[in-house]
Amino acid sequence: MSKSLYETLGVSENATQSEIKKAYRNLAKKYHPDINKTKEAEEKFKEINAAYEILGDEEKKAQYDQYGDTMFGGQNFHDFARGQGAGVDINEILRQMFGQGGFGAGGFSGGFGAGGFGGGFAQPDLDISATLTIDFETAVKGGKKNISINGETFDIKIPQGVKDGQKIRAKGKGRSAQGFPRGDLIITLNVQESSEYTRDGDDLIKSFDIPLKTALFGGKVEIETLERTITLKVPKNTKQNQKFRVKEMGVLNRKTNQKGSLYLKANIILPKIEDLDPQLVQMLEEKLPQGV
Image (cartoon, rainbow, N blue to C red; front, side, top):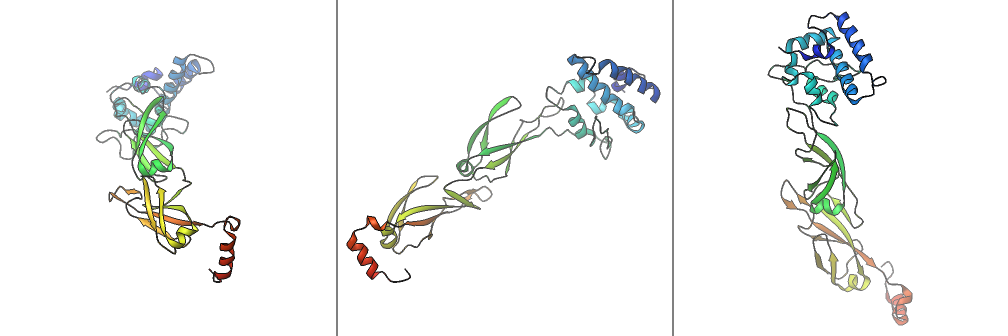
């Protein structure tokens, strides 16, 4: 069984803890970034530290001696570490594979997972998270947004009816790790507020202006909605903030595949007294009942 961590430190599999520690110190001094400024030295220094975190601990060393390089998919540790690609945190991958802590200052706590290897080690978590801000209309109607992440630019499809804080998944846009399927990008949506609409579940509420004459005597009003322009028939004696329901012009419920309603709330615009005919003003002042 191959055990490449010993090769990383340049010691035999039968080396004592004293020998392992001495080899580590010599190599760490040689490849320390403050002394050796090459990129190769930086990568080598990380590998040396990772190897010592395991071999310098009796319990972890015993676990590694049992499983060897099977924990790296049969690769030696050098190839495994450098095969993950630029920008990939090897410590994070190892934490996911073998428990919290990983190869780092916090040690390799948790061993190789709660249940050991059994049928093999767990796949690392290669998913990444991001936040995307979208406008209110896109949240209701759906659409596409172009995003750039990790040097890659692509379009994200926004489904109809998404809510603020909802998560959507972009398959295969996460991190890469050799020997594993590429992870996903998990996007949390931040929906901007609308100056025209408020949302109540699957329903939308929008205010519309009508003149006093239309409110008193009725009439028709054209209203722009997110879908199209509609003509609303306003009855006589319409009250301030009175609501009119337009079915199936709200937000799509993706579970039921049905749309909510659009509620149009009347905002009555009163004329200025100085713009009215003086005789009409006098008549209104005399004839309008108190309390109206």
